[in-house]
Image 1 (cartoon, rainbow, N blue to C red):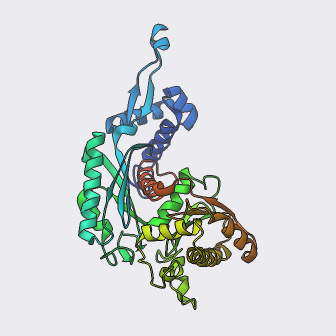
Image 2 (image 1 turned 45 degrees about the vertical axis):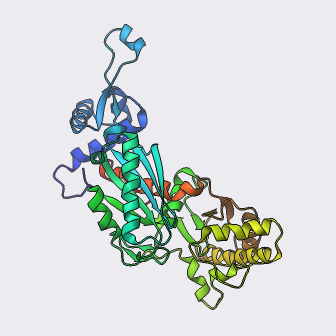
Image 3 (image 1 turned 90 degrees about the horizontal axis):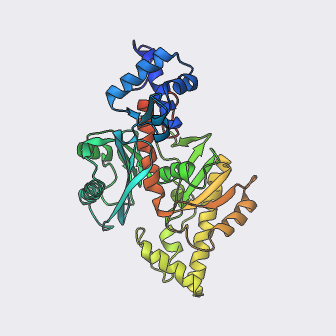
Length: 384
């Protein structure tokens, strides 16, 4: 079932199917009478649509409750078959691959991770993705051909077709046709998104930003990135480069992020998360050089985030990434944003932690399926 179009001869039937299926998904196991009331359609129309949906495998007749059986023949009830297909959310990171599996309702039924070397080539990293997926599907007892959509969160500037236009965080990532490569493996729609954008979507779906449609998610790494929602829609910018605040040091701020957190004068490796975490741990133990390094890092982070806040005026800033669990990040950020910003936003820590990117990737897959099946309104992540 594809996108609705005005020239489609079966437009009315498809609209009716979308309306009935949406009602079935949200109402549990309604009767035909219930569906008639919920949708405003006539009973014969609802009955015909339901029979058609049963034929597609998306709907099944629900078993009557025990009490209803004793009272005679109960009214037929129906339910949306969330098990009629499955979705994957994948995070491709510098040190690990994380995978989430769900039914068509987006509820996670399995998860898995695979470690990967930061120096791994693009081919080696993609092989780790395939291995992580195969292992998860095997453990969950889910056949590969039941996958209806796959969402992927990846570092870099990602084009609409899933090509990574610029990706300096991973070896061999710039110019990689990531979407095309993964579609060969899954043979179902694959939605590829920047990792910070995916995390922003996740926080809006299940995390700290559930109550707002205007928010910024800051992935507070050595070179920070950000994803944002404006009016409840993911904002990518014209070419997908919105939120690349890690490049702000190029605008006259010569000290690179790798040197900000150095305690020795030698720059840290951009992908060495362990070394970064050690600097923060040393600062907590009172090491003077580490304390100074962390202060430099926080000041740069504040300036980067403040620039984005001044441009976008979000209601909420959510801080995630490896720095999310470290003491001392949120309060200085709040204080400095109050100094620099005309209307300081609320600042909160990510509720999803290291699961944020994979969760957002799963939401991408769910949005694709919802646009196919329900086709009533544009989703949060739909591209214009």
